[in-house]
Image (cartoon, rainbow, N blue to C red; front, side, top):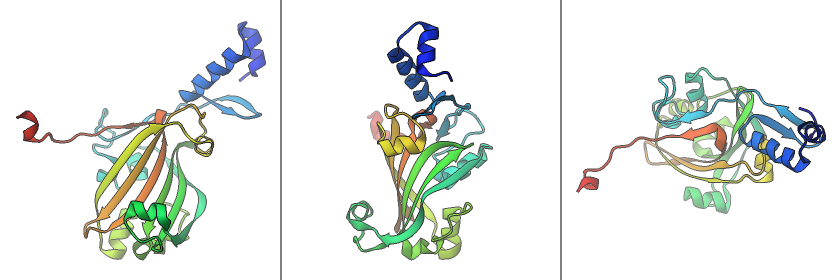
Length: 230
Protein backbone atom coordinates (compact mmCIF):
# COMPACT_ATOMS: atom_id res chain seq x y z
CA UNK A 1 0.00 0.00 0.00
CA UNK A 2 1.13 3.63 -0.38
CA UNK A 3 3.03 5.17 2.50
CA UNK A 4 1.10 6.93 5.29
CA UNK A 5 2.26 10.32 4.01
CA UNK A 6 1.03 9.58 0.50
CA UNK A 7 -2.32 8.34 1.75
CA UNK A 8 -2.75 11.41 3.96
CA UNK A 9 -2.08 13.72 1.01
CA UNK A 10 -4.36 11.79 -1.33
CA UNK A 11 -7.23 11.63 1.17
CA UNK A 12 -6.67 15.18 2.52
CA UNK A 13 -6.39 14.04 6.11
CA UNK A 14 -3.74 13.73 8.80
CA UNK A 15 -1.20 10.95 9.16
CA UNK A 16 -2.67 10.25 12.62
CA UNK A 17 -6.04 9.47 11.02
CA UNK A 18 -4.41 7.31 8.35
CA UNK A 19 -2.40 5.39 10.96
CA UNK A 20 -5.55 4.79 13.05
CA UNK A 21 -7.39 3.52 9.97
CA UNK A 22 -4.52 1.16 9.08
CA UNK A 23 -4.46 -0.21 12.62
CA UNK A 24 -8.20 -0.85 12.40
CA UNK A 25 -7.70 -2.69 9.10
CA UNK A 26 -4.93 -4.73 10.70
CA UNK A 27 -7.19 -5.60 13.63
CA UNK A 28 -9.73 -6.89 11.12
CA UNK A 29 -7.02 -8.98 9.39
CA UNK A 30 -7.25 -7.04 6.15
CA UNK A 31 -3.67 -5.70 6.17
CA UNK A 32 -0.31 -6.50 7.72
CA UNK A 33 1.75 -3.61 9.07
CA UNK A 34 5.45 -4.42 8.98
CA UNK A 35 7.73 -1.98 10.87
CA UNK A 36 10.02 -0.01 8.53
CA UNK A 37 8.45 -1.75 5.51
CA UNK A 38 4.87 -0.50 5.28
CA UNK A 39 1.35 -1.89 5.08
CA UNK A 40 0.50 -4.88 2.91
CA UNK A 41 -2.91 -6.16 1.88
CA UNK A 42 -3.46 -9.54 3.47
CA UNK A 43 -4.98 -12.51 1.68
CA UNK A 44 -8.45 -13.48 2.83
CA UNK A 45 -8.31 -15.40 6.15
CA UNK A 46 -11.41 -17.28 7.16
CA UNK A 47 -12.37 -17.52 10.82
CA UNK A 48 -11.94 -20.95 12.40
CA UNK A 49 -15.05 -22.19 14.19
CA UNK A 50 -14.19 -24.60 17.00
CA UNK A 51 -17.21 -26.44 18.35
CA UNK A 52 -20.89 -26.73 17.43
CA UNK A 53 -21.20 -26.14 13.69
CA UNK A 54 -22.70 -23.25 11.77
CA UNK A 55 -21.99 -25.18 8.56
CA UNK A 56 -22.19 -28.96 8.00
CA UNK A 57 -18.49 -29.15 7.05
CA UNK A 58 -17.30 -27.79 10.40
CA UNK A 59 -16.47 -29.99 13.38
CA UNK A 60 -19.51 -30.98 15.43
CA UNK A 61 -17.68 -30.77 18.73
CA UNK A 62 -14.68 -29.04 20.35
CA UNK A 63 -11.49 -29.85 18.45
CA UNK A 64 -10.08 -32.48 20.83
CA UNK A 65 -13.35 -34.34 21.32
CA UNK A 66 -13.86 -35.41 17.72
CA UNK A 67 -10.57 -34.97 15.89
CA UNK A 68 -7.89 -35.09 18.59
CA UNK A 69 -6.14 -31.92 17.43
CA UNK A 70 -6.55 -28.56 15.73
CA UNK A 71 -4.67 -29.88 12.70
CA UNK A 72 -7.01 -32.81 12.17
CA UNK A 73 -10.01 -30.51 12.69
CA UNK A 74 -8.66 -28.27 9.91
CA UNK A 75 -7.98 -31.29 7.70
CA UNK A 76 -11.64 -32.24 8.06
CA UNK A 77 -12.51 -28.80 6.67
CA UNK A 78 -10.09 -29.19 3.77
CA UNK A 79 -7.71 -26.53 5.11
CA UNK A 80 -3.94 -26.91 5.14
CA UNK A 81 -2.19 -26.39 8.47
CA UNK A 82 1.56 -25.97 8.93
CA UNK A 83 3.48 -26.22 12.21
CA UNK A 84 6.46 -23.92 12.76
CA UNK A 85 8.50 -24.66 15.87
CA UNK A 86 9.68 -21.51 17.65
CA UNK A 87 12.29 -23.58 19.47
CA UNK A 88 13.33 -27.23 19.12
CA UNK A 89 11.48 -29.65 21.40
CA UNK A 90 13.33 -30.37 24.64
CA UNK A 91 13.05 -32.59 27.71
CA UNK A 92 13.50 -30.59 30.90
CA UNK A 93 12.34 -30.36 34.52
CA UNK A 94 8.82 -28.96 34.55
CA UNK A 95 9.68 -26.23 37.09
CA UNK A 96 7.55 -24.56 39.71
CA UNK A 97 5.00 -22.69 37.58
CA UNK A 98 4.02 -25.43 35.14
CA UNK A 99 4.51 -28.09 37.82
CA UNK A 100 1.88 -26.34 39.93
CA UNK A 101 -0.51 -26.26 36.96
CA UNK A 102 0.00 -30.00 36.38
CA UNK A 103 0.07 -30.95 40.05
CA UNK A 104 3.49 -32.63 39.78
CA UNK A 105 6.90 -32.14 41.40
CA UNK A 106 9.04 -29.37 39.85
CA UNK A 107 11.79 -31.90 39.04
CA UNK A 108 9.46 -34.11 36.96
CA UNK A 109 10.75 -34.45 33.39
CA UNK A 110 8.47 -33.16 30.64
CA UNK A 111 8.67 -32.81 26.88
CA UNK A 112 8.19 -29.18 25.88
CA UNK A 113 6.97 -28.27 22.38
CA UNK A 114 6.75 -24.54 21.53
CA UNK A 115 5.23 -23.81 18.13
CA UNK A 116 2.90 -21.79 15.90
CA UNK A 117 0.01 -23.18 13.86
CA UNK A 118 -0.40 -21.55 10.47
CA UNK A 119 -3.56 -22.15 8.46
CA UNK A 120 -2.92 -21.58 4.76
CA UNK A 121 0.28 -19.77 5.82
CA UNK A 122 -1.49 -17.31 8.18
CA UNK A 123 -0.46 -17.56 11.88
CA UNK A 124 -3.56 -18.54 13.85
CA UNK A 125 -2.27 -19.62 17.27
CA UNK A 126 0.80 -20.10 19.45
CA UNK A 127 1.07 -23.30 21.50
CA UNK A 128 3.39 -23.97 24.43
CA UNK A 129 2.84 -27.62 25.43
CA UNK A 130 4.21 -29.75 28.24
CA UNK A 131 3.84 -33.56 28.15
CA UNK A 132 4.96 -36.13 30.71
CA UNK A 133 8.30 -37.39 29.37
CA UNK A 134 7.65 -40.80 30.92
CA UNK A 135 4.83 -41.25 28.40
CA UNK A 136 5.70 -39.03 25.44
CA UNK A 137 9.46 -38.42 25.72
CA UNK A 138 10.08 -40.61 22.66
CA UNK A 139 8.67 -37.79 20.52
CA UNK A 140 11.80 -35.72 21.22
CA UNK A 141 13.44 -34.72 17.94
CA UNK A 142 10.37 -35.55 15.86
CA UNK A 143 9.39 -31.97 15.11
CA UNK A 144 9.33 -32.50 11.34
CA UNK A 145 6.05 -33.79 10.01
CA UNK A 146 2.77 -34.16 11.84
CA UNK A 147 2.32 -37.02 14.31
CA UNK A 148 -1.22 -37.34 15.76
CA UNK A 149 -0.45 -37.16 19.48
CA UNK A 150 -3.42 -39.12 20.84
CA UNK A 151 -3.02 -41.84 18.24
CA UNK A 152 0.70 -42.11 19.07
CA UNK A 153 -0.10 -42.29 22.80
CA UNK A 154 -2.57 -45.14 22.28
CA UNK A 155 -0.28 -47.12 19.97
CA UNK A 156 2.85 -46.79 22.15
CA UNK A 157 1.47 -46.80 25.69
CA UNK A 158 -2.01 -48.28 25.43
CA UNK A 159 -3.47 -45.14 27.04
CA UNK A 160 -6.26 -43.13 25.47
CA UNK A 161 -6.92 -39.42 25.86
CA UNK A 162 -10.17 -39.30 27.80
CA UNK A 163 -10.91 -35.89 29.33
CA UNK A 164 -9.91 -32.26 28.76
CA UNK A 165 -10.50 -29.06 30.69
CA UNK A 166 -10.12 -25.61 29.14
CA UNK A 167 -10.04 -22.15 30.64
CA UNK A 168 -10.00 -19.10 28.36
CA UNK A 169 -9.97 -15.34 28.55
CA UNK A 170 -9.54 -12.45 26.12
CA UNK A 171 -6.69 -9.96 26.52
CA UNK A 172 -4.22 -7.84 24.57
CA UNK A 173 -1.07 -9.62 23.32
CA UNK A 174 2.48 -9.12 24.50
CA UNK A 175 4.98 -7.71 22.01
CA UNK A 176 6.36 -11.21 21.35
CA UNK A 177 2.90 -12.72 20.84
CA UNK A 178 1.89 -9.92 18.46
CA UNK A 179 5.07 -10.46 16.43
CA UNK A 180 4.53 -14.23 16.17
CA UNK A 181 0.88 -13.81 15.14
CA UNK A 182 1.56 -10.83 12.84
CA UNK A 183 -1.01 -8.64 14.60
CA UNK A 184 -1.05 -5.23 16.27
CA UNK A 185 -0.57 -4.82 20.02
CA UNK A 186 -4.12 -3.44 20.27
CA UNK A 187 -5.68 -6.52 18.64
CA UNK A 188 -7.13 -8.99 21.19
CA UNK A 189 -6.03 -12.60 21.58
CA UNK A 190 -7.68 -15.57 23.26
CA UNK A 191 -5.54 -16.89 26.12
CA UNK A 192 -6.47 -20.55 26.66
CA UNK A 193 -5.14 -23.05 29.20
CA UNK A 194 -5.79 -26.72 28.43
CA UNK A 195 -5.31 -29.84 30.57
CA UNK A 196 -5.72 -33.37 29.14
CA UNK A 197 -6.09 -36.63 31.09
CA UNK A 198 -5.68 -40.24 29.95
CA UNK A 199 -8.25 -42.96 30.63
CA UNK A 200 -6.26 -44.14 33.66
CA UNK A 201 -6.61 -40.69 35.26
CA UNK A 202 -3.08 -39.48 34.42
CA UNK A 203 -2.78 -35.79 33.58
CA UNK A 204 -0.30 -36.08 30.73
CA UNK A 205 -0.59 -32.70 28.94
CA UNK A 206 -0.76 -29.03 29.79
CA UNK A 207 -0.88 -26.56 26.89
CA UNK A 208 -0.99 -22.78 26.89
CA UNK A 209 -2.57 -21.46 23.68
CA UNK A 210 -2.53 -17.87 22.41
CA UNK A 211 -4.99 -17.54 19.52
CA UNK A 212 -5.70 -14.60 17.22
CA UNK A 213 -9.16 -13.65 18.53
CA UNK A 214 -10.36 -12.34 15.18
CA UNK A 215 -9.64 -15.71 13.53
CA UNK A 216 -11.26 -17.98 16.13
CA UNK A 217 -14.78 -18.64 17.31
CA UNK A 218 -15.21 -21.07 20.20
CA UNK A 219 -18.69 -22.59 20.46
CA UNK A 220 -20.02 -25.17 22.90
CA UNK A 221 -23.19 -27.14 23.48
CA UNK A 222 -24.16 -29.04 26.61
CA UNK A 223 -27.11 -30.57 28.40
CA UNK A 224 -28.91 -28.52 31.07
CA UNK A 225 -29.46 -30.26 34.40
CA UNK A 226 -33.05 -30.83 35.46
CA UNK A 227 -32.41 -28.86 38.66
CA UNK A 228 -32.05 -25.67 36.57
CA UNK A 229 -35.80 -25.77 35.84
CA UNK A 230 -36.89 -26.27 39.44
